[in-house]
Length: 305
Length: 281
Image (cartoon, rainbow over all chains, first blue to last red; front, side, top):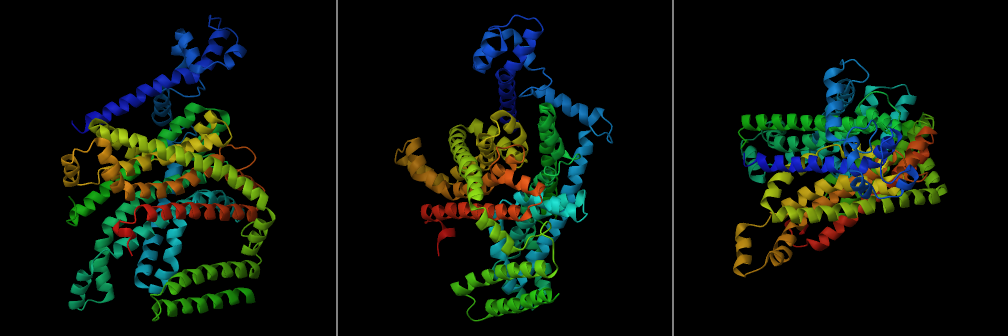
């Protein structure tokens, strides 16, 4: 209870601030609509109001506050509108419907998971190579580290279009971007992990006359597991971002990124916000899943707290 | 075909050279440590060039490095204008605002235990979310120009910074804090003389992570709408025109800007936290 109470208070404050912010954000359109419907507002005339501050307008027209929370295309949708849209597009719609967020979420999720799997496996393989070959370590490692400072996402549109022009479409290009983004965190984390046993432990295995393979399976790999999970958590979040950004440039019609894009084209703010919350929920679930796996694995290995 | 064969032979030769260098007696020297990755990078570039020319790969799929360099030298004014719009205006201003805001919030959190227990879990939760997704909303609110990009960057850097600064501020031991108390140090004296310096490694870790995020945020936000200048705008329109050499040119600029930004932050870190074990040589 001591843990949860402050979090609940902070979240409640955020929601309250959000409701408060809705009033000035949406007051201009609310007043225009009200005037059209024949309600007296102060001051009259949209042209007069255009240059007035939103907060001043909101204070002058307390009667219209309710309207600011129930618009079709608000500048800032109220929390209950977003929740209603989320409910409507996940539970009420059929899963196969083009308007179902579960359908769009699945499109993005499948690309994310495929890319994440490819990136993780490739990253682990490269890390094993780096740890065992000095030449590879010295050649590749500086580039792997330097590449993390590069805005890799900038390449996303090009990958999509190039693969499209050679005939690869749909899931795979997005998965490649996801794989690319989750690849480097895994490489760097795994290299660190595979090197984490100290000299004493390596010496002990030497006294047992263990071969390189045995050292790898019995010492290096188990020692690297905590590091692997730490980078997996970074990697899966990066994969999701990669899949979403991968959906932007081609004007894709399916996926959460496409929902964001079409929402911004047509000014469907509620759709954008609900897609945004869907990505947030998806990311939270994925990270929580990995964290759960981490806890279970580490406990089995006797490393858990 | 001969060019492709030449590329493969070259690969084998230079790889052998690298293996010799890495396992040779001189492998510990600084020259070799710098040389090996450089040779590797150069090998990749030359192979790229030879294979693209050897197999006649069309420029709309993969342009050769020399074409990209030619494009960079031809379009320098455009690239500079894009760099100014996206990096200097969008990314840097957002970075500065976001980091400052995170710093002030961190001090607030630090002063109140209730806020720490309430805001920190929310903060680390938000730090793991795909915040780039807020770009369409912020573009709608702040218009197409750099202000909306700066706003995206502020959101992107705020939470990683916040989590890192708060973690850093709790880095001192009870013993050290008690020592400050016995000297009757006020909160701010303890803050400036003990806890802020101790937090510096964490703060710089956050600053380095954020430097990459800032550039990504500024570029991706431009995919949702921008004036007719900017790196993200140029990338998305050039992709549409299949001018891939221009796309690559922008990517080179973005990569250089990103690593330079990171490098500068890392240099300042070395200067500020010279006392930390990770900086000793």
